[in-house]
Length: 152
Image 1 (cartoon, rainbow, N blue to C red):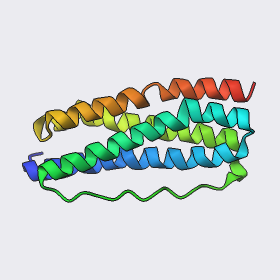
Image 2 (image 1 turned 45 degrees about the horizontal axis):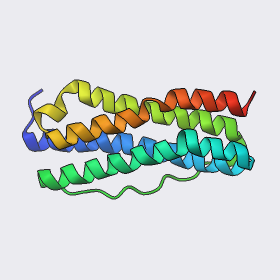
Image 3 (image 1 turned 135 degrees about the horizontal axis):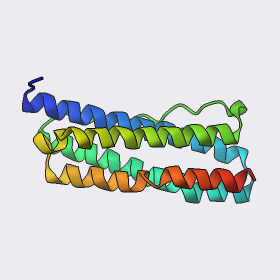
Image 4 (image 1 turned 90 degrees about the vertical axis):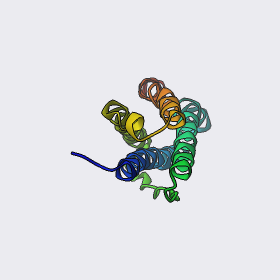
């Protein structure tokens, strides 16, 4: 399907926004899970998942905004995701967060594979997306480690 450069750039921004929203949902889930855990387990959750997810979220938002500015497209505000109910239990919340983070990483991987960032993006955006994926990639393993540590 043929598209204009402007349409391609908007599609690229929309896809990055989709990943950002997934990371935001993961952060909301992790925040609720943290409140359900004792201090020691909460500290591990923060170290292994929350801080890296927060870093990826910030980098992705900055990349989105910077590229929108360079492309002359409107930026976007990302509202905090609604906090889920804690009745699911901390383990279920952490598992769901890990799934959200994996989904965000998959979204960015698919975007990179599509070559859209090469066709209508720029080197700064491509670098930023790679940096976000470097943070997101290990979180699946970190999540598995956390689950083993917290629920032995």
